[in-house]
Amino acid sequence: MGPRSDLPLSDNPAIRILPWIIALMVYLATLTLAGGLLVATMADEWSRSLTGALTVQVTPTKSESLAELDARVAQATRTLLKTPGVKSAHAIPLAEISAMLEPWLGPESNIADLPLPRLIAVTLDRELDREALAQRLQKTPGAEIDDHEYWRTHLVMFLRSLEIVAVIMVSLIGVTTATIVVFATRSGLAVHLEVIEVLHLIGAPDDYIASQFQRHAQRLGFIGGVAGGVFGVATLLGLSTLAGNLDGAALPSFQNWHWPVLAALPIASAYIAKWTARRIVIRALTSMV
Amino acid sequence: MATSNNTIVKFEKVGIRYGTGPEVLRDINFDLAEASFSFLTGVSGAGKSSLLRLMYLATRPNRGLVTMFGKDVTTVTRNELPAIRRNIGVVFQDFRLLNHLNVFDNVALPLRVSGAPEDVVDKHVSELLTWVGLADHLKALPPTLSGGQKQRVAIARAVIARPRLLLADEPTGNVNDAIAVRLLYLFEELNRVGTTVVIATHNEALVDRFGHAQLHLDKGSITHRRVEPNS
Image (cartoon, rainbow over all chains, first blue to last red; front, side, top):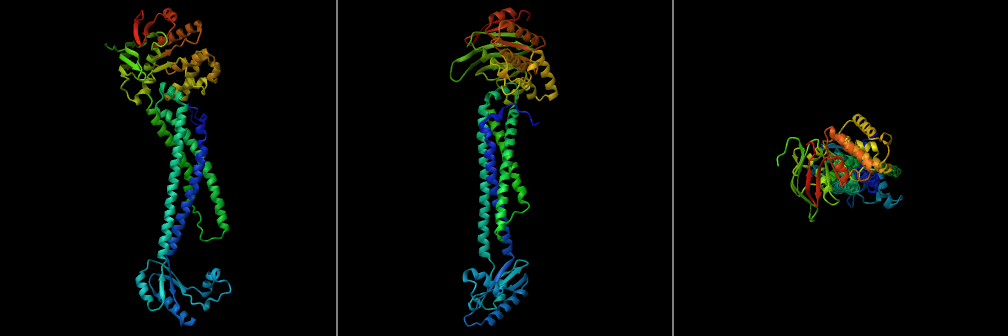
C-alpha cells in the first residue's frame, strides 16, 4: 500500500491528463536525445577515422605513359612508408577506382584511358608533420597530400551543432514538462483549496500538504515517463531495424551506454514533476494565512 | 491588563476588517483562563465567527494584540503556526468534513498531521468513535451521514488530539434541543478533563441553562461579560 493522501488529487481532470502529456514529452525527448547521441557517436567516429588517415594524390602529366605513372606512384608509396608516423600506405588499385567511378561513368568504361589521378591511402599511427611530409614528397612530381582537414573540420562542426540543437531541444522539452506540471498543480491547489484550509487549521504544516502534491506528481510523472520511454525505445528499435536493412555502413548504431541514458528520461520526468509541484505548492501556501 | 499564568487566550484592543470595509470587530478585550468554559453569544452578524476565526488562527487582526498559549500570534512566523494550531480543536458550523475521506480517516486527520504512529491512531480513533456512538460507521463517507452524525464526527475530529482549547461555532444549530443538551454535556465532560471550551451560539436558553461564562457580542464589540459563578 502506498503512502496515504488526504487530498483527492486524482479527482482533478487537469491532473488526470498529466501522465498523458508527460508520456508525449518523454517520447519526444527520447527520440531527440537518441538522435543527439547518434550524431555525437557519428562525429566521434568520423573525426577519429579521418584523423588517423590521409590520401596522397599523384596527378598524371600529359605525355606520361601508364607505366611511368605507376613508377611515380610506387616512388611516392616508398617515400611514405619510410616516413615516421606512417603505419601503412598502399596505392588504390585501378579496379577499385573504377568501381568507385562506376555510378558516374557506367560499367563499360575503361578508366585506364582516362587521365585520372592515382590515389595512395595512408594510415597513420601518430600525429604527422604535414610540412615535413610535403617536402619529402617533392621528390615525386605531381604528388599532393589531402589530409581531409577541410572536410573533417566542417563536418564535425556541423555534427557538433546538431548535438547542441538536440541538447537545447531536450532542455526545452524539460521546461515544457515543468510548465505543464505548474498549471496542473495550480489547478489542483484551486480545486482543493477548502481541504487545504482544513488541513492547515488542524495544524498541518506546509510541508505535509506539499509532500502530498509532490508524491502524486512524481508518481504520475514516472508513469507517463515510462510509457513515453517505452514507446520511444520501440520506435528507435524499429528505425534501427530499418537502418540495418539498408546495409549502410556509414549509418551510426546505438552503443551500450546509450540505453541507460535514455532510460534515465522517465526518472528525470518524475523528478521534474515532483520538484516543480513542490515548489509551486510551497509558494502558494506561503501566501495563505 | 495583567496576564495570569493560566491565561491561554488574551485579546487586547483587537480590531479586524475585511478589505476596505468597516471593522467587523472593534476594540475587543478579554482573556480566557485554562480549563474555563465560555459561551460566545450575539445575533447573526455580530462578529462571533470572526472572533472564532481569530482564535483558531484562520486570519490575523488588523490591529491589537492576540496572545495564545503565551505567544503573540500577530507576529509569529508561518512555521510556528502549525504547532500553535495543534493546541486548538475546532468544530465548524458547517462541519467542514472531508467528503472523500471516511469517518475514521476524518477523525484521524489531526493525529496523522502531528505524525502519530498508525497503531496509536487506530486505537484512539476507534475508542473515540465508539464513545460518540459511531463505531458502526467507521467506513462511511460524510455525505451518507445524518446531520447529527456529521456533528459528532466533527466534534470527534476536534477533540481527538486532546487540544488545550476547543472552539465550537454554533454546534447546536443543526440539532434539536435534546441533542443540543447532550452535546453540551459532552463539552462539559471535555472541560472537566482540562480543555478550555468556547462555544459560539445564539441559543440564549441553552446559555442560561448551563450558566457558564458569557461573552456577548453586539455590532462587533463585546457589550457585556458574565464570569463563571465558580471562577
